[in-house]
Image (cartoon, rainbow, N blue to C red; front, side, top):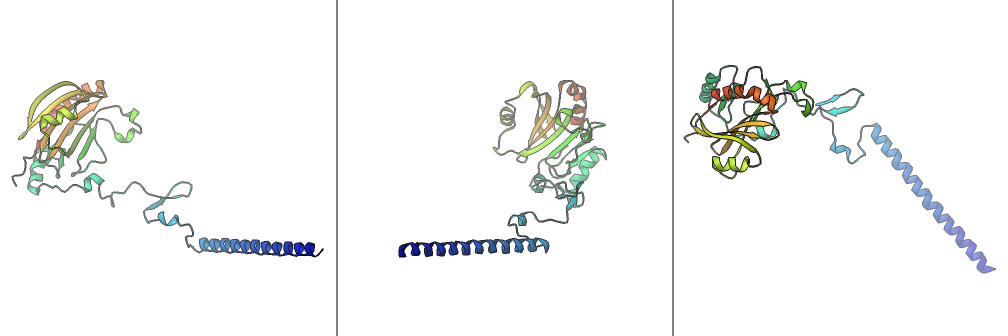
Amino acid sequence: METSKKKSSLKVVVALVLILVLGAGIGFGVMYFTKSKDASQDGTESDPLSGLFKKTEEETTVEGGEDIADSVPSQSNYEGSEAELEVKKEITETDQETLREKVGDIGYVNKAYGYAFVPPEDFFEDGINSDISPFVYYTSYDPKEATTVGEVPGVKVEVVVQENAKNQTLDEWIEEGHSYMDSKSLEKITVGDFEAVKEEVDYEGMMTTVTLLKEGDVYTFALYGSDKEYEQYKDDFDQLLETLVVLPESKE
Protein backbone atom coordinates (compact mmCIF):
# COMPACT_ATOMS: atom_id res chain seq x y z
CA MET A 1 0.00 0.00 0.00
CA GLU A 2 2.76 2.39 0.95
CA THR A 3 4.69 1.45 -2.17
CA SER A 4 1.65 2.30 -4.28
CA LYS A 5 1.43 5.78 -2.69
CA LYS A 6 5.11 6.41 -3.42
CA LYS A 7 4.59 5.52 -7.07
CA SER A 8 1.62 7.87 -7.30
CA SER A 9 3.59 10.71 -5.71
CA LEU A 10 6.45 10.11 -8.15
CA LYS A 11 4.08 10.29 -11.12
CA VAL A 12 2.71 13.60 -9.83
CA VAL A 13 6.24 15.03 -9.47
CA VAL A 14 7.21 13.91 -12.99
CA ALA A 15 4.02 15.42 -14.41
CA LEU A 16 4.69 18.73 -12.67
CA VAL A 17 8.26 18.80 -14.05
CA LEU A 18 7.01 18.15 -17.59
CA ILE A 19 4.42 20.91 -17.25
CA LEU A 20 7.09 23.37 -16.08
CA VAL A 21 9.43 22.44 -18.94
CA LEU A 22 6.70 22.74 -21.57
CA GLY A 23 5.52 26.02 -20.08
CA ALA A 24 9.02 27.47 -20.16
CA GLY A 25 9.48 26.38 -23.79
CA ILE A 26 6.20 27.93 -24.88
CA GLY A 27 7.01 31.12 -23.02
CA PHE A 28 10.42 31.39 -24.66
CA GLY A 29 8.90 30.77 -28.08
CA VAL A 30 6.31 33.52 -27.57
CA MET A 31 9.01 35.95 -26.42
CA TYR A 32 11.22 35.13 -29.46
CA PHE A 33 8.34 35.50 -31.90
CA THR A 34 7.30 38.81 -30.35
CA LYS A 35 10.87 40.12 -30.42
CA SER A 36 11.34 39.10 -34.07
CA LYS A 37 8.04 40.67 -35.04
CA ASP A 38 8.92 43.93 -33.28
CA ALA A 39 12.33 43.96 -34.92
CA SER A 40 10.87 43.61 -38.41
CA GLN A 41 8.37 46.39 -37.71
CA ASP A 42 11.01 48.88 -36.59
CA GLY A 43 13.38 48.03 -39.48
CA THR A 44 15.85 45.85 -37.55
CA GLU A 45 17.01 42.86 -39.60
CA SER A 46 16.52 39.54 -37.81
CA ASP A 47 17.44 37.26 -40.73
CA PRO A 48 21.21 36.72 -40.68
CA LEU A 49 21.20 36.39 -44.51
CA SER A 50 19.49 39.72 -45.06
CA GLY A 51 22.75 41.57 -44.53
CA LEU A 52 24.01 40.08 -47.78
CA PHE A 53 21.29 41.79 -49.81
CA LYS A 54 21.38 45.42 -48.73
CA LYS A 55 19.52 47.86 -50.92
CA THR A 56 21.37 50.64 -52.66
CA GLU A 57 20.38 53.85 -54.36
CA GLU A 58 20.90 52.13 -57.72
CA GLU A 59 17.96 49.77 -57.19
CA THR A 60 14.88 50.37 -59.30
CA THR A 61 11.22 49.39 -59.01
CA VAL A 62 9.87 47.15 -61.72
CA GLU A 63 6.31 46.24 -62.63
CA GLY A 64 4.72 44.41 -59.73
CA GLY A 65 6.43 46.55 -57.10
CA GLU A 66 9.55 44.46 -56.53
CA ASP A 67 12.81 46.28 -55.80
CA ILE A 68 15.75 44.85 -57.75
CA ALA A 69 19.33 46.02 -58.34
CA ASP A 70 19.78 47.51 -61.75
CA SER A 71 22.14 45.05 -63.43
CA VAL A 72 22.76 47.27 -66.46
CA PRO A 73 24.97 50.26 -65.53
CA SER A 74 23.95 53.66 -66.83
CA GLN A 75 26.23 55.76 -69.02
CA SER A 76 26.93 58.06 -66.07
CA ASN A 77 28.34 55.40 -63.72
CA TYR A 78 29.73 52.81 -66.17
CA GLU A 79 33.44 52.32 -65.47
CA GLY A 80 34.14 49.76 -68.20
CA SER A 81 34.17 46.01 -68.53
CA GLU A 82 36.55 43.82 -66.54
CA ALA A 83 38.78 43.55 -69.61
CA GLU A 84 38.78 47.32 -70.07
CA LEU A 85 39.63 47.97 -66.43
CA GLU A 86 42.71 45.75 -66.81
CA VAL A 87 44.04 47.74 -69.77
CA LYS A 88 47.22 49.60 -68.80
CA LYS A 89 48.29 50.75 -72.26
CA GLU A 90 47.62 54.08 -73.89
CA ILE A 91 49.19 55.63 -76.96
CA THR A 92 50.22 59.27 -76.98
CA GLU A 93 47.85 62.05 -77.98
CA THR A 94 50.00 62.65 -81.05
CA ASP A 95 49.57 59.02 -82.14
CA GLN A 96 45.83 59.26 -81.47
CA GLU A 97 45.63 62.30 -83.72
CA THR A 98 47.66 60.48 -86.40
CA LEU A 99 45.25 57.55 -86.38
CA ARG A 100 42.24 59.85 -86.44
CA GLU A 101 43.61 61.68 -89.45
CA LYS A 102 44.09 58.35 -91.25
CA VAL A 103 40.50 57.12 -90.80
CA GLY A 104 38.59 60.37 -90.38
CA ASP A 105 35.48 60.90 -88.28
CA ILE A 106 33.77 57.75 -89.56
CA GLY A 107 36.66 55.50 -88.48
CA TYR A 108 37.27 53.62 -85.25
CA VAL A 109 40.42 54.42 -83.23
CA ASN A 110 41.71 52.28 -80.37
CA LYS A 111 43.93 54.39 -78.13
CA ALA A 112 45.05 51.49 -75.95
CA TYR A 113 46.34 49.13 -78.64
CA GLY A 114 47.19 51.69 -81.33
CA TYR A 115 45.16 50.75 -84.38
CA ALA A 116 42.35 52.21 -86.46
CA PHE A 117 40.13 51.28 -89.40
CA VAL A 118 37.03 52.37 -91.27
CA PRO A 119 34.17 49.88 -90.72
CA PRO A 120 32.04 48.83 -93.68
CA GLU A 121 29.38 51.33 -94.65
CA ASP A 122 26.01 50.78 -92.97
CA PHE A 123 27.45 48.37 -90.40
CA PHE A 124 26.26 48.76 -86.80
CA GLU A 125 28.67 49.39 -83.95
CA ASP A 126 28.23 47.08 -80.98
CA GLY A 127 27.27 48.73 -77.71
CA ILE A 128 30.26 47.24 -75.84
CA ASN A 129 32.81 48.98 -78.08
CA SER A 130 35.07 51.57 -76.51
CA ASP A 131 38.33 53.25 -77.51
CA ILE A 132 40.37 51.06 -75.14
CA SER A 133 38.59 47.71 -75.37
CA PRO A 134 40.49 44.58 -76.46
CA PHE A 135 37.22 43.37 -78.05
CA VAL A 136 35.54 45.36 -80.82
CA TYR A 137 32.54 44.36 -82.95
CA TYR A 138 30.64 45.70 -85.94
CA THR A 139 27.68 43.88 -87.48
CA SER A 140 25.73 44.02 -90.72
CA TYR A 141 22.54 43.77 -88.65
CA ASP A 142 21.20 45.93 -85.85
CA PRO A 143 22.03 43.98 -82.65
CA LYS A 144 19.06 45.63 -80.94
CA GLU A 145 16.75 43.83 -83.35
CA ALA A 146 18.19 40.36 -82.65
CA THR A 147 17.13 38.85 -79.33
CA THR A 148 18.51 35.34 -79.87
CA VAL A 149 21.50 33.88 -81.68
CA GLY A 150 19.15 32.20 -84.14
CA GLU A 151 17.87 35.58 -85.27
CA VAL A 152 21.30 36.91 -86.27
CA PRO A 153 20.83 37.41 -90.02
CA GLY A 154 24.15 38.83 -91.20
CA VAL A 155 27.88 38.89 -90.61
CA LYS A 156 30.16 40.30 -87.94
CA VAL A 157 33.51 42.09 -88.02
CA GLU A 158 35.44 41.29 -84.88
CA VAL A 159 38.76 42.55 -83.51
CA VAL A 160 40.39 40.72 -80.61
CA VAL A 161 43.66 41.63 -78.91
CA GLN A 162 45.00 39.02 -76.51
CA GLU A 163 48.25 38.27 -74.76
CA ASN A 164 50.78 36.06 -76.52
CA ALA A 165 51.16 34.08 -73.31
CA LYS A 166 53.42 31.38 -74.81
CA ASN A 167 55.55 33.91 -76.68
CA GLN A 168 54.83 32.06 -79.92
CA THR A 169 55.86 33.08 -83.39
CA LEU A 170 53.12 34.05 -85.81
CA ASP A 171 53.31 30.68 -87.58
CA GLU A 172 53.16 28.80 -84.28
CA TRP A 173 50.12 30.81 -83.19
CA ILE A 174 48.27 30.09 -86.43
CA GLU A 175 49.20 26.41 -86.40
CA GLU A 176 47.98 25.88 -82.85
CA GLY A 177 45.11 28.34 -82.70
CA HIS A 178 43.55 27.40 -86.05
CA SER A 179 44.26 23.66 -85.96
CA TYR A 180 40.59 22.82 -85.38
CA MET A 181 39.43 24.88 -88.39
CA ASP A 182 39.17 23.77 -92.00
CA SER A 183 41.63 26.07 -93.79
CA LYS A 184 40.62 27.07 -97.33
CA SER A 185 43.47 29.46 -98.10
CA LEU A 186 46.42 31.10 -96.37
CA GLU A 187 48.75 33.90 -97.42
CA LYS A 188 51.35 36.17 -95.87
CA ILE A 189 50.55 39.88 -96.11
CA THR A 190 51.83 43.08 -94.52
CA VAL A 191 49.88 45.52 -92.37
CA GLY A 192 51.98 48.63 -91.98
CA ASP A 193 55.29 47.52 -90.47
CA PHE A 194 53.96 44.10 -89.52
CA GLU A 195 53.99 40.72 -91.17
CA ALA A 196 50.53 39.19 -90.96
CA VAL A 197 48.73 36.01 -91.97
CA LYS A 198 45.44 36.19 -93.85
CA GLU A 199 43.52 32.94 -93.72
CA GLU A 200 40.11 31.84 -94.90
CA VAL A 201 38.61 29.00 -92.86
CA ASP A 202 35.40 27.04 -92.55
CA TYR A 203 34.35 26.92 -88.92
CA GLU A 204 30.60 26.84 -88.24
CA GLY A 205 30.32 29.15 -91.23
CA MET A 206 32.96 30.93 -93.28
CA MET A 207 35.54 33.24 -91.75
CA THR A 208 38.50 35.32 -92.86
CA THR A 209 41.11 36.22 -90.24
CA VAL A 210 44.10 38.55 -90.37
CA THR A 211 46.56 37.94 -87.53
CA LEU A 212 49.68 39.83 -86.47
CA LEU A 213 51.93 40.10 -83.43
CA LYS A 214 52.79 43.35 -81.67
CA GLU A 215 54.52 44.02 -78.35
CA GLY A 216 53.59 40.73 -76.71
CA ASP A 217 50.01 40.73 -77.98
CA VAL A 218 48.19 38.94 -80.79
CA TYR A 219 45.90 41.10 -82.94
CA THR A 220 43.16 39.30 -84.87
CA PHE A 221 40.84 41.02 -87.33
CA ALA A 222 38.04 38.79 -88.62
CA LEU A 223 34.90 38.61 -90.70
CA TYR A 224 32.53 35.70 -90.18
CA GLY A 225 28.98 34.59 -90.90
CA SER A 226 26.91 32.04 -92.75
CA ASP A 227 28.11 31.11 -96.24
CA LYS A 228 25.65 33.28 -98.17
CA GLU A 229 26.07 36.49 -96.13
CA TYR A 230 29.82 35.94 -95.83
CA GLU A 231 30.28 35.90 -99.60
CA GLN A 232 28.18 39.06 -99.83
CA TYR A 233 30.47 41.01 -97.49
CA LYS A 234 33.94 39.64 -98.34
CA ASP A 235 34.76 42.66 -100.50
CA ASP A 236 33.66 45.00 -97.72
CA PHE A 237 36.11 43.31 -95.35
CA ASP A 238 38.91 43.64 -97.88
CA GLN A 239 38.13 47.37 -98.10
CA LEU A 240 38.31 47.57 -94.31
CA LEU A 241 41.76 45.97 -94.41
CA GLU A 242 42.89 48.61 -96.89
CA THR A 243 42.03 51.29 -94.31
CA LEU A 244 43.60 49.39 -91.39
CA VAL A 245 46.41 51.26 -89.63
CA VAL A 246 48.49 49.68 -86.84
CA LEU A 247 51.05 51.90 -85.16
CA PRO A 248 54.66 50.65 -85.16
CA GLU A 249 56.03 49.08 -82.02
CA SER A 250 57.35 51.48 -79.41
CA LYS A 251 61.11 52.07 -79.54
CA GLU A 252 61.35 52.28 -75.76
